Length: 158
Image 1 (spheres, rainbow, N blue to C red):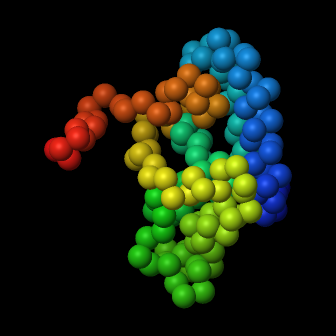
Image 2 (tube, rainbow, N blue to C red; image 1 turned 180 degrees about the vertical axis):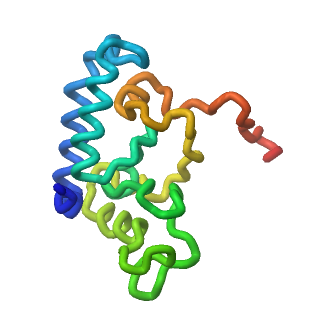
């Protein structure tokens, strides 16, 4: 619907910062299970859905991927393209679709604040957060927590 806005990553970057600045003071009320959570979820579905085809993963990394939702990749890859990107930049799974990561690379080049984050390694998606608010999870540090049962590597790589 409004997906053409993705082609203006600098403006989207500014919008991201503006939204964060506006909601950060309300952190103590914007918590999982709060009365405001359903409203925030509906707002995210409507806004991010129309612009980014948001998949409501609960761990939004749009600002780190050139304002391109990595979850729209048919393989849900969060750390770059697979080995099947076609010579014309299209997806191996959906040949009619431009690779999400080709778009992310091109768009990130126009983002002065977050564009460099494209090369950061992202953790695997925590599927337990699907359907929850990425903004609430970000404000409360939930999106960066290691889920129970996952084991983080120690300094020795074991």
